[in-house]
Picture 1: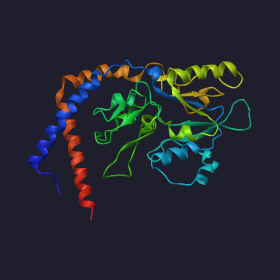
Picture 2: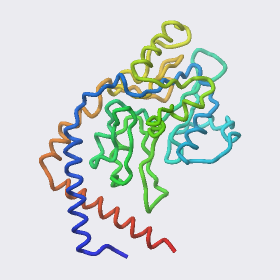
Picture 3: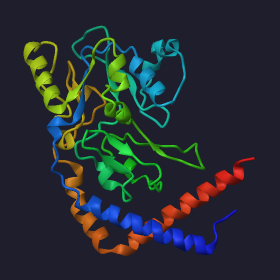
Picture 4: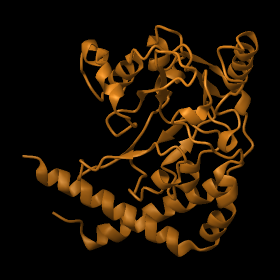
Amino acid sequence: MGIKRREFFKLAGAATATLVPAMAAAGEESHEADYDNMRCVLVDAAVCIGCRKCELACNRQNGLSDKPLAAYEDKTVFSIHRRPSSDAYTVINSFANPKGIENKSYLKVQCMHCNDPACVSACIVGALRKTPEGPVTYDAWRCIGCRYCMVACPFQIPAYEYNNPLNPRVKKCTFCAERLREGKRPACVEICPAEALIYGTRRELLELAHLKIMQNPGLYRDYVYGESEVGGTGWLYLASTDFSHTELPPLPGDAIPHRTETIQHGIFKSFIPPLALYGLLGLVMHSLRRDDQQEAEP
């Protein structure tokens, strides 16, 4: 069952009218933000024991898996390198310690919730948004599936539901935004038995990270990853080794959107037809997706 022609044009006009102001607002969004007081997590790889309980908590919090705790005690997963996916927002990988220590070190990876996210800048319909509290959130209703966010992310984090043909979404760590609004800590932080994940404001955690380095010079490398990379991130890292030995990529200090938004927003603010086109395409995809779902229902 398809949509009628009259309904199509009514909905298309409404969609375009809605998207144009949203795009204009996105283009005019200021880079001035109170980064110091945004919510942040410090990952201390030097004390992480690789228990994978953070994976368990994340999967349960987001309804991704109901596997029992015993399933996360399997350490054979460290024999292969894993990446966050549409059904696993965070994973822990192991890496060799170049100091010759027999035990391996572990590193948790997830969306970095950048101060000035490239994915937000790349999203042409405002489906991704950097909140004042810190999390980068996603609105599936707005998303048109262009996947520009996946290309833009310097950490290669956003994942697409290729196995969901009717209602595919871009999926990633949510920073437990709902829990934060309730005054709770992220689920992964709350469950961590080694206190390798520490939650607070970005200012507090940067001060704590540098204090840890000063008090334990033999344990930590004198560097906080995420303090300046791509303009700073909402997840900060300490490690006992050079980060080149981990999977965190070497990145410049400039925020990526600062390099691209001037051209991008200049085009879209003055050239309305692309907005109308994407509004139409987004509406058609949403309508067809709804019709397919209705036909699939018994």
